[in-house]
Amino acid sequence: MAMFPQKYGNSSVVDFSDFVSFLLSGGTRDNDHVRPQTSICAVCSLTYDVIGKAETFELDSQFILPQIGLSESSDLLHQRYHSSGGPTEVLTRRYLASLTPSQQLALNHYYRRDFEAFGYDPQEYL
Picture 1: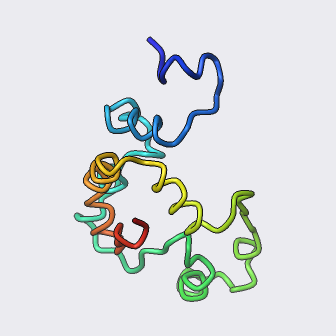
Picture 2 (picture 1 turned 90 degrees about the vertical axis):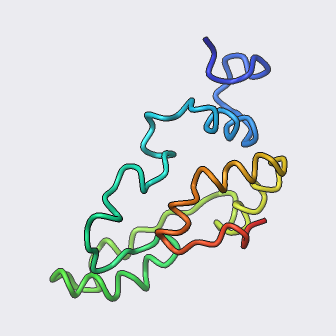
């Protein structure tokens, strides 16, 4: 059984719309990278002191690192990861714009608990 529609053949490149359809059909249920994070972490049953976010990593690190005994000059802060496609916000809007309204609604529902738990507003990207 093929993971994605036949139009891709053996290609490892899949468009976002087809990936979302595959995700929403349960095709990735065992992949922790795309599962709702609230389904694999104890966000609701543990008391966290801080929840850091990738998009505010440097600012969050200025608060977190001293709390755990590391200096702000730690090598951790100086590692940079860049996308060749542009800023995250731009890429997110571009990918979401490629979805049908029903896919957008279903994707919002799929990640609803994550949006609530981590303080994201999916409407910002639609």
